[in-house]
Amino acid sequence: MSDDAPAGLDFIRQIIADDNASGKHDGRVVTRFPPEPNGFLHIGHAKSVCLNFGVAEENNGRCFLRFDDTNPLKEDQDFVDAIEADVRWLGYDWEDRLTHASDYYEDLYNCAVQLIEAGKAYVDSQTPDEIRATRGTLTEPGQNSPHRERPAAESLDLFQRMRAGEFADGELVLRAKINMASPNINLRDPIIFRIRHAAHQRTGDKWCIYPMYDFAHTISDALEGITHSLCTLEFEDHRPLYDWILDQLTLPHRPRQIEFSRLNVAYMITSKRRLAELIDIGQVGGWDDPRMPTIAGLRRRGYPAAALRDFCSRVGVTKKDHLIEMALLETCVRENLNEDAPRAMAVLDPVKLVLTNYPADQVEMMTAANHPQRGELGEREVPFGRELWIERDDFMEDPPKKFFRLKPGGEVRLRNAYIIRCDEVVKGEDGNVTELRCTYDADTRSGLPGASRKVKGTIHWVSAAHAVSAPVRLYDRLFTVPRPDMDKSGRDFKDFLNPESLQEMPAAKLEPVLGDAAAGAVYQFERTGYFVADSQDSQPGAPVFNRVVTLRDTWAKLEQAALQELGNA
Ligand code: ATP
Ligand code: MG
Image (cartoon, rainbow, N blue to C red):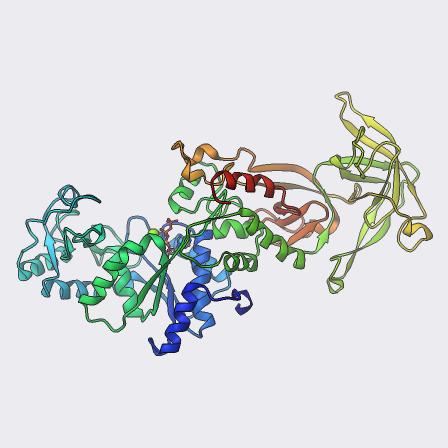
């Protein structure tokens, strides 16, 4: 994937290059991606995956996939499986480096014992409420626990008995002994072990005490020989604790934590908790709903993995907080699909067109290129007949001046076929057009003398006798505002759901080749957009298509205006 790497070095890659040059880690580069298995990965995680696996790959290094499974109450094997599938799909391989914080529970316990023996940790008997109340605030220091000076031997005994299950949840905790007056709240004697009588998905009932994130994460990094521990900016204030833990213990390696800014994409939310909420209230069908900003959702939506990698690389790695336009993501998707997706014709909102001078029992096979620039993708035969479907909005009875599609008395070319003229408009009782009666110019198909005759418009079509009828789902943004989770008036993010995020065309008309599409196959429906045969609901013979993205960026102007208003120009 080295072709995805940006031209200049970002600040993290620069640090790594400098460390390699100075021999700081003997030239080793070891990173890790440490998800908590309490939900599916989202597009923000994709940035972290691409960064961690990417820099390892570029430096002949190694990257671990480490599950941060320190909270037995919230975690689930289904999430573990989904995360593995997503990282693999993104194009990365952890080989034999799949680990879990729970692999290190015994080491973490021993490190805690080391701290107690060194007088750097103590068992606190205060209630959770008391601990919270004495933590202080941003402006006021905390207060020492009455148990802070408890002798090491006593703490050690209590800690061993915590492990043995002699106490109830919340009765005792193990705290690092740092500084209750530190301006950094993370250093005010943080809890490093707590009691949780809960079965863990991997260790079962073996443990009833569980390490806290900062403690587990720091020591796991050191044990795995991580050289550069890359995480998002909200952990910047945790770095002093990370370094404190490394300073106190005898560990085989000394990792360095480096923070970068989170990826935020306009009109998307990247919080597992909020995404889970959308599922709980039935707003979306699940974690892999094609409208979800999860990797599984984007995959089902038809976004190629290469487009996501390209996006992450174009977004870059900095320390600046910013909001990325969704237009950039869609551009990456369009560019990728424009290269690779075969073309086909499909009519989403059909109206009947009858060629009155075309023999009723005649069928011709028209030759169509599968890709306008890539001859190696071949050609196909598309059946043509007297009755066709065309797109309802490719006809206007009373069109404005520059309308070059079909109008009464006007001519258009049918893509890959003849020039036709509209002679008569048939309407139903409600005034809606039910049929267009046209005549074709028999001299104008490819290979005949009139083939070069020019008319201003070309429209797509599907033969009515051969069309495959199928549902087509048109997906749009899930939210109507760029930052639904940061509303100034404090409204809930769910107030900004886009009621038109899913529109279903119940009976689109597809050319025959699309009827046999394999689940997951992506096509460009000419003039309409890119569409994927749904990976769950579609099968050859009974297709269901999802719109991946439109051909043009219809949102760009709106989005730019909205972002400017947010002061993000
Ligand atoms: P969420 O808030 O969605 O639950 P999280 O940060 O709690 O996300 P983790 O599973 O703990 O999720 O994250 C795994 C890794 O992914 C962490 O190193 C985290 O920094 C990184 N990460 C999470 N969200 C983003 C984001 N929006 N952009 C970049 N990296 C992210
Ligand atoms: Mg987290």
